[in-house]
Image (cartoon, rainbow, N blue to C red; front, side, top):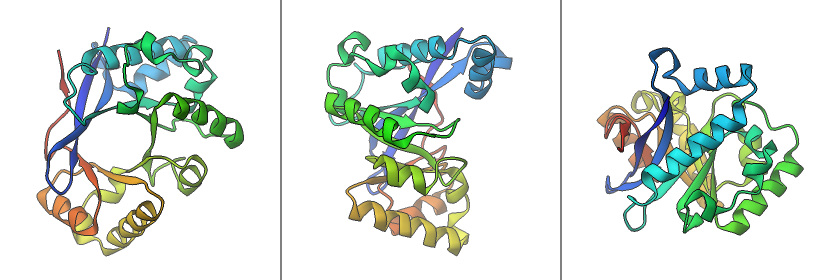
Length: 223
């Protein structure tokens, strides 16, 4: 009773599709939200089972539909790395022929408490070819500590930093600083929650590499 919708990530400069983020949804209205899905799974002690199911659906629904140069972004919680099935993930078993086209978004519903161990997990996945993103940067646990310790390939800026950025000079300065940091360290920045053309033009002027939001598309079911 779950399905996947896909939300495009857009090249800011050209507005071409760069990739798709897979978003979990529940068929039943009261389980529509992924947050509620995982709360229910946690109560039933079935978080790992739910995560495995969603990964399988996300990959099977899109991996063979990606065009040349496009990427699939999968949301991963730090607790997923406690699951031996995920930690020892074989890309072929999941149907991923080229792991370099898959970006694992670290979505921190829970804080990372042991960075050295977590870094070892990421190293093993990187050796298999996967890329990483820190999701919702600027919100909750996803702060500067995660960026500094995880050295992600992508930094996804939370909608709270992007909403009305065209009229908020403090947000502009913060995002500009983040872009400069990313450029200095070979990282790419994605602005989440772009809903207005003025916001797009502002993040474009700042130099944000990619954007995502309702201005372009709403998430949609690929089936």
